[in-house]
Image (cartoon, rainbow, N blue to C red):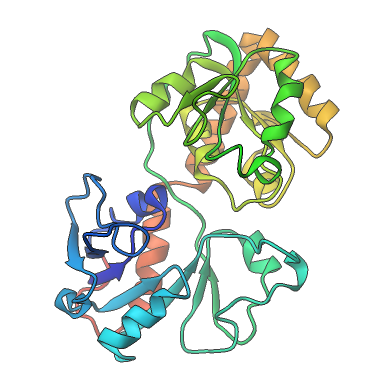
Length: 312
């Protein structure tokens, strides 16, 4: 199957393009946000297509991720190509009463990455499907040699309360906390935007992974940390309570409970190892790449049933 999608969410796309199809991403000299292309990613099955010549891709299906993308598709492809709208995010404001921008139509299914997101959005008459995250396994790399915490947060200054970056000082009173991600250089414990696979090795040296987000979709960084074999201390918000089992660490909305468990895991490396193994086992069982790709194959085949050989 030939699939057209924008390079919006690099980590999610990295998993999606491993599905055995042909993938096309719009590219332009201006780059982001509409013509990012591969942006240096090593995706063998992905071909760049000029932003003003989307028809060159001859797609069998289009995966939209932003409402504005529909204008590009409509202008160049019309309505003849089946479309799917992939929603990465939980509603940002007035969550319980937020109406999804695709809610008023019934021709394009909305695919949510968590059941929580599907619950919180008012999806109207649009068909709704949930395809949970699946990510490539980075391997069990946990050593926990550093009695410290690690967190991955992009742009923590701008997104301080949303990401829970303001909670980190409470944990730093117990042990050092190193912060990885875009916009972290120069901040306390900031390590900058470290690319994988070096990122995985650096994270896995830390005793505990901290997931402090107050309001976000389920972060792929949390799942990556669990697959590395790291124990988790997580704020109980959005989809995190369903993603992290109790034996993997702790999930709570009480900062005192989180701080207490963080202290225990930092100072009890044997317990931290056991919790990390439970985290990895859970992540492999619920967020494996094969199940993710199989679910997408079923959905793509249902959306474009006339395409010969659509299913793998």
